[in-house]
Image (cartoon, rainbow, N blue to C red; front, side):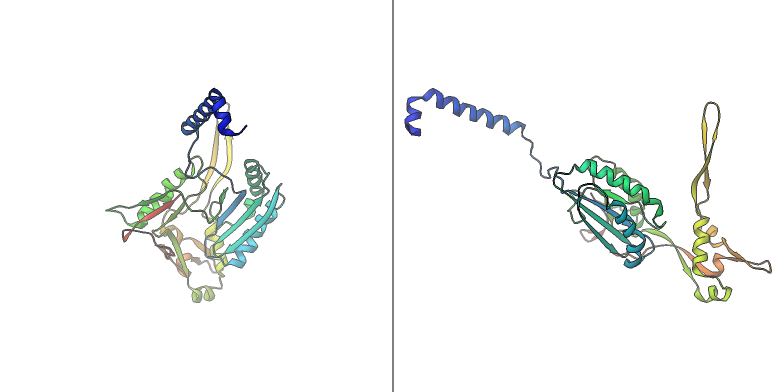
Length: 286
């Protein structure tokens, strides 16, 4: 019995089959979600660490990349480990097996990384550990502009408030900011003066680093409450940096930072530009 003959002899059965297909199609039309960017996992976890000071790739590899590689190399279900070291940035990309539970693997990676985080240089920025590929295209791009503020002022507002707020949103893997120059305190050392006083540049940076601290130093416990004691020692003005004592000479004189270097409240040289209709803006990539 072929299909036409079956349809003629059993019209009720054919009608029921067609009705069931229509019913399933209708339910699927309204219940099946449609996503332009479906929540899929690529089986990769990236650790991206920015390093201040323009450290060359060889030192980034030795001081940052290798310790991170050794820490995460023992993660379970790890299939491939790829690292990229370039000036001021270290990237470690871990690829996992298809059967791996990525939520569990991400937790394990964070635990492994936390053990060696304190061993990394102080010049590193806040590390980014997320399940995304560095080459992924952002799904939302926001241009921030103002008629009264400069792009440097806008960049400061975005970095201090908006960037962290977007990172806390569920499902956001990373937030990058472009445009506007970052405010930095620049110290231009005078090699001639350093040589005249016999002071190496490392001594200057060590003094500044040890006196620019904001650390938890202890606690005071009482019957009903407990107080945390912090050491507030961060520089607040340019004058404080300039007047910091670098070395005390045997004859009683002191060598200050301003005697061997020039301190400027300036901005880093731009290495990227952001435009909207030819107008400079600050762009947020989510």
